[in-house]
Image (cartoon, rainbow, N blue to C red):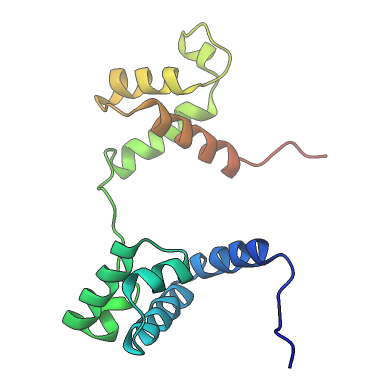
Length: 149
């Protein structure tokens, strides 16, 4: 019997890894498959290479599984860092961003990361980095409806 081969294995591998990352359920199954291979005698290094993960990541999965069982490898809450702005401040900021900076006494016609960082510091007493401000601007533009065509 001939050995089966997949055309473009690197592309297929990347597509599968992206699919795994899209869903909590698929990430959990990914970890469970890794644990299954480990239970069949594969090393953490071998499983990490096979799954395109870091060896330490696989070791962390094992430790979490050993301490918490299946719950340890399923997706949990990812609360992240607490917001630096209150809900009320976010609403005010959205209104600020909907106006042109020139209408607020600034020489620029369009918001940019530096201007937003300065605005947040001056008006809200909040210090955010340039990249964070750029992300906020990008997200606010994506949510804003475009002109009617």
